[in-house]
Amino acid sequence: MLTLYHNPISQISRRVWIVLLEKKLEFELVEVNHLEGEQFKPSFLEINPFHHIPVLVDDGFKIVESLAILDYIEAKYSTPAMLPNNATERAIVRMVQLVTANELFSAFNLLISHWLGLSVEDAEKVEQAKQQVATVLKYFENLLDDRPYFGSQNLTLAEVVAGTVIPWLPSTGVSLCDYPKLNAWCHRLVARPAWQATAVTIEAMEALKSRMVRV
Image (cartoon, rainbow, N blue to C red; front, side):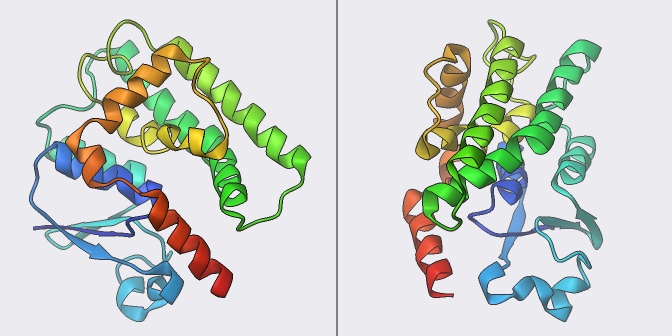
């Protein structure tokens, strides 16, 4: 049995959750409550000494780091395939994953924190984050062609990484109107059952805000 240690408001652990659903695998969800410090408990540190989620455990084998987990699932549970065989198409998927992780996510986190009022950033830093996001969105817009997904007719690992971040951007004040292909791509994703089943609601984010303020 697969076991996913996660938190439902974590966009990073949501990547793995979506893949498990899309591949129709049987798995158990174990929530790790970061606000209660559960990631520092000895029982969890035995699973991941770096006290991060997600962690996937497959028959006793522990996999940390979300991109490594996605690769593991794809290699072991290859149906439906979510990584193209064609070299160019596979490179597109990898680029989207890594650009999201390395270029988009930090700016996204700043904008989310600012939107929730969890951090007080000056206007210049917020504008810099929006410019960084715009650079990524333009790049992704140019990567999309007439196919519904990045480099493929079918859902790929690019979608589960970028597609857990980009649909949230309008909530932070970043419009997708200037990126019609990417905007249509977002609408396709959020209509999928796996996205709906794992959706992080605004209510959940507001509850997090209230809890963080009390802490």
